[in-house]
Length: 395
Image 1 (cartoon, rainbow, N blue to C red):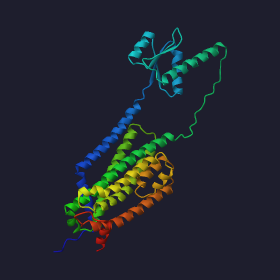
Image 2 (image 1 turned 60 degrees about the vertical axis):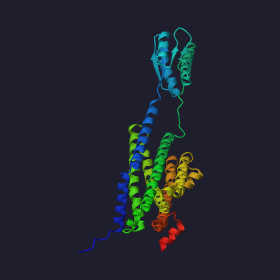
Image 3 (image 1 turned 180 degrees about the vertical axis):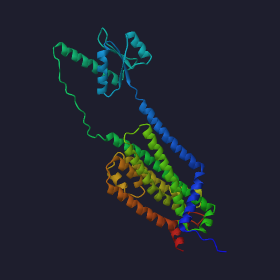
Image 4 (image 1 turned 135 degrees about the horizontal axis):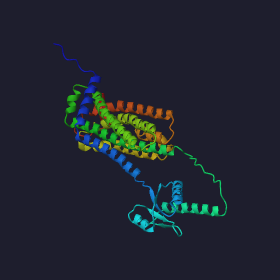
């Protein structure tokens, strides 16, 4: 009877990856964190809808010649970018009742005496400006007509925006910042998953059984691939929900740019995860207890925090020296470059260079980190030094 054929490296990696995926989708912490992220995202979209719908029009009551005052008030409101709705009222008594019932914000009384603006407590800023402008416009027109001046040719002043794309740029930046925030959270979350899995296997001695059938690099690759597929699926779902919600609620004017920014964030997640997952796994292999895990992963977590802070800063100054330089630094670029792409004009060669540098860094950390991982994985009893792990790996 022939012996069973040993599985190849690719099959081993797939087995480990499937094991990691099955373990995490049953993990309550993972399920809760995923649900919290989606709830926060949907909640933020709903809040934005509420805020956008909260700009109610300014309702101005009119007692008097509404045929003249109404159009003048609306025209003045349009000039001041105030949405004015005119309400015709019979007399001052009806005006007072409408104000007390909060049916109108104020009432212009211009019947039989000098115009007067009635309000409940305070008129604010926009309402007096609208009313004063409308009354002044009508008064000037009447005085000119009385003096025999008619048919004035008043030129309309056109508006020319120096930066017509400013609002669209702002939307892209907001989407990029939200995306980078999600990316940062997922990198920390899945980096911790990788690290915790390594320590759990070391402390329970499961790793000894696993390494009896596969090589250390296969175990490392399987962990990174498995959790990477899970993380990629999660960020794709989050981006899809965010983009769909923004389009359904009509929160953006540029769906193409929105989708492009979301795709950019997803692609940078792939590079960032490959880098940080390897670093977290290597760091975790140096210890054997969960109590020691925080200390060894803290430097990597701090780098992620710095990258996130610099990424947010890049939204205000995408062409500044700090943003430009850090967008090429491995480990920082996944959180800085997407914001630079959204907030400024980044040339294609800059993106290509940042990606190339990141790929070289990933290859280097996987190669060197794989040796450390292999040398430290079977060492228990305390924290292993990197030099000791490298020496053990060579033996």
